[in-house]
Amino acid sequence: MKKLFLLSILVITLNLLFGCSDNTSNAAQESAKTACIGKNANFSIEFFKANNLGKKFDRGINHVIVFNPRSEKLDFKVNVGLAHKIYAKNSQGKLRKEYVPKIFREIIADENSQLNRQTPIAAINADYIGTDNKPQGLNISRGFEYSGDFKNKRSSFGVSGGNPKNRKATIQAGRRKEEILNYNLVGGNGRFYRDGKFKDICNDLGEFACKQATNRSLAAVTDKGYVILLVNDAKANSNIEFSQNNQELLPDKFDEVLEGISKNNCLGKIQEGILFDGGMSPGLFYNNKIYVENAGPIGSVFLIYKK
Image (cartoon, rainbow, N blue to C red; front, side):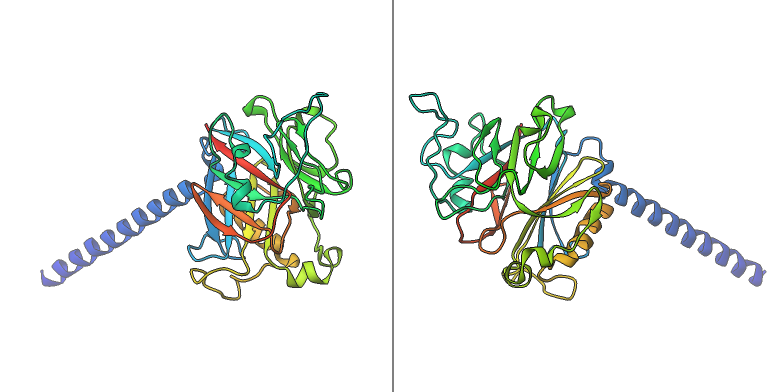
């Protein structure tokens, strides 16, 4: 009887253990599904920090904004440094373009950064600025162009106009053939993904931009149409935990962090990737907080709004 009693206790204990294990496993799977933002039909925008493998990490060096350009909850705009109201025209009916140098904090907070009197929920620095204070690449804000000498040579990032459900994010050089794709564009440089193929652009950038001016600002578009905005802050504050997988981001590692972010969040495969102005220019803002800000003037910013 004693042996039978002990055997019964053993069977009950094993059942409880396996039952708990299954429940824990199911809970973990449910949690993973929730964390996989690309599978959420209502997903619009999210901010998090990540290490250089693309894994979410509260003390990560990479500040990441992921968004769905097709979300009806979002809208977009581009701002540049101007001494007057954006879209203003002169007495001849031509667009006024009196440029002034502005740093990230200024250009995301002036009156021109508002859309329908609403301030942005998110922003990232974009184009380079010339010695004449003029943006260098292709910049178009809701159909109005503020571009520079390299607008046809350098690649740009943008989100199209039209019905939100049909909006599309693109990265390519020059104006797009479909005019609706030229609605909101910001200039950049250093195209390191093209048609899904990654390229180490260290040699293209040169020694200084590749290995010394290592504050990075970049954007990527996946085959599912999602957008990843990322700023790696090589001069990060004490909240960053530096390690082998959490340090300055060199061009040969761009694919690791982006593919990690995309895979871990079910966003699809990276199709296009572009560098924005780095070094003294990177800035990233989300939900009333500037997470990264450098001291250099910038050519343009890409702004995101919540309706």
